[in-house]
Each structure stands twice: as C-alpha cells, then as structure tokens.
Length: 256
Ligand SMILES: [Zn+2]
Image (cartoon, rainbow, N blue to C red; front, side, top):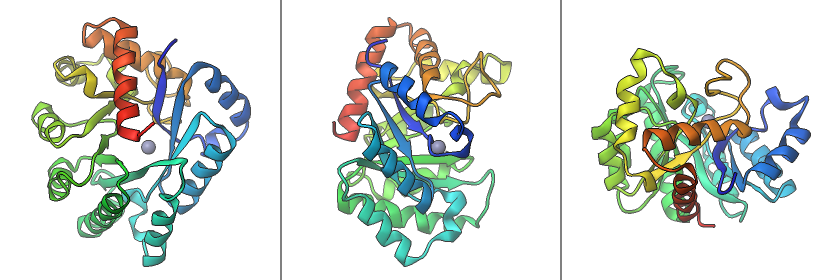
C-alpha cells in the first residue's frame, strides 16, 4: 500500500524480543517510515539505536508522564543531547496522564513544561500523550503557542478540544480505538468524520491498542493499514487519497 507509515511505535519493548528483526524486515517492505517513540532514558536510547540500524525507522526521545519521577537535571540534558541527532525527529512522548496518576499533577506538569521548553529551543516537534488530562494539557500547549508544534497521539478529546489544538498548529493522530464499533465509541467516531483530513496522522502505538480484528493481541506496525482504512471510511475518502494527504502532513511536521 502506497504512503503507509506509522508515526507512533515502541518496537524496543520486550513484547517484540522473540521476533523483532523479522517483524522490522516485514515492516520495511510495507511502510515508508515508522517513528519509534521513547518514554524514558533507556527507551529513548533504544529508539535511537533502532533508527541507526534501520533507515526507515526514525526516533523520538522524551520522558513520558508515568516516568516523570525519574526526572533530574541530568536527564533533561540527556534529552537535549538526543535532539541533536538527525535520526531524532521529535521530542516525545511527553504530556500528562491522570488515569494512571503515577505522580501528582504538579510534578507531571513541570516535567511536561520543561520538555516543551527544550523542544522550543531545538525547534523540534513534540509527541503529546494526554490521558484524562485534557484541560491541563491544553493549558500547557497554550503557554507555548507559536513556539512549539506537534501531534496529540491517540487523540481522545472532543471536537472542541480538536479545534483548539488544530488552531495552534497541532496534528491529531489516531490508532486502533477508531476501529472499535461499540456504542460508547459512536460520538468519537462521529467527531473524527468531521475533522480536516490533512491534519490527521496514523499510528498503531504498537505493542498496544491493536485494531479490530486483532483487539487484545500484541499490536504491530503492519496493522496500521486497518487504522488508515477505518479513518478513510469515516472521512468518506478514497484510501489512497487519504494516505497521500496524511503522509504529507507527517512529513511536514517531522521535517522529512
Ligand atoms: Zn506510546
């Protein structure tokens, strides 16, 4: 499939240990590019190593809110250093997570804002994780309006939030949950059908969030075609036309 890509994967994770190389070989034949996203120091380093090894993989480096308590000044310097590498196309994933709430909001917000400052300094886009923390996420994005761009990954907000962040130049990316047909998901799917298609990116968040018909299984970037297919049908667009627009958006954001 032409123009297929995956802007959010974690191929470094242990779930892939027994088949990582063969999976990545297969992905390199099916996808134009994948972005392997870090969530702490070790995974950021592993993302970079994957990007060194495989030309179609790019990396993102950052400290996920569930690992915020690991933060120390040395770690912020390390993240800055990662961003100097050509293979590191974004700072992420960063943001807030009030679902798991591993650390109090104040600590999460400080680490998030510190990393937004680093992204502004390096002029690199950010990959945002926002789980049940929409209002505080918007507040921090607004504080950096015009200085930082990025993508809200596995976007879970409503139309009003979508408009707010689209206005600030952000993209929205969607993963497996767009394929879930349960009743609770109807408003979410309706909201997507009215979004501007050129602002929608595609991802799997592998190994998590497998789309139908693989729900509950280990997800792989190969399944991004199910996400793209569902999005194009929600948007009432031809799949190839949607993929061309979406890929152009990803290339614009990540600078390649
Ligand atoms: Zn992720």
